[in-house]
Length: 400
Image 1 (cartoon, rainbow, N blue to C red):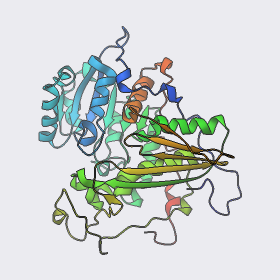
Image 2: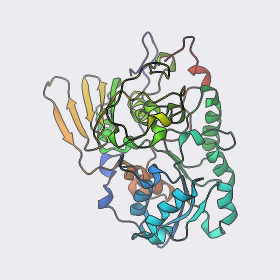
Image 3: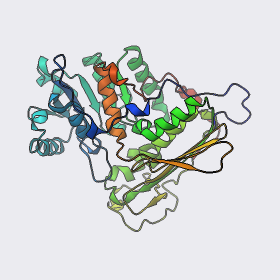
């Protein structure tokens, strides 16, 4: 990604300088203590979705419930868990209630819908925050059954939202509804964080600090993302008609980082290439799902940038006024390589024990509770202020 499209003669688009955090403020989870102040009693949280992002999986480090337990300690009270799969929700809660965090879950209501939760909720159980982790094909627009955010704004006005990425998936024609939803969130001044957790990496914030301290302009970003697919046993991930494919499901993090460093994207310059359902695909040597169960003539996820293993292979390069910064392995132990003008020697910084999932939850909670001593910031919002309008996505050609 370049800061300006070819032939663009206007001023360079710069990312928002205020959307950064002092790296020293990103404290590891095991170095923090849950604050129990007289003015801070129980903290009620409503979970929407009982899947992997909420309760963890072998595929990766995501697990919002785990981070909330460490951030809030005994203050955490999960007042409701909404998921149409009652059996899965009950199994997740059973595990929690067999552990040391039983007090957070022992009174949790299991409900199929938000309406069901509202019917059984007592006034004391009104949530202080809602974590939305349901699959993206079931949220992010205004159609019935896919409008959980709009329902939450109506029934719990002002209650902060944490919404997982991607905020929605679906055909281009639905994008206007997502813009309308973003405007509703922005106009209501609802605190809302979106789960682009790589923005909260210490390495990423160190890169932002280098840019700001040296007053640099980003000229180009280059990203590479290769999935370690051996542990990906979720069938929807392999069915493009549901998850929209690996770029939307996971590679979106690197699209987001390119936008975070390089500024807003000129949509007219974007091209995409994918393997379609009627084209011959490569054969993966080991699969954890039965691909024959995916209905024919529905798009499969063309995950050919894959390899066997458990750790993803990912890199992001940022070029700025003679500086080169290369972030490697952001999902495991991030390493930042830096080259400066006039010096061909490459220096490196390793960021062990960093947990961006905890940092994003921590800053979300601190923003809600106005803990100014922690200088909290939400780095990825749902306000839609700088997102191109739906009309800008149309092209005369048919991109693939």
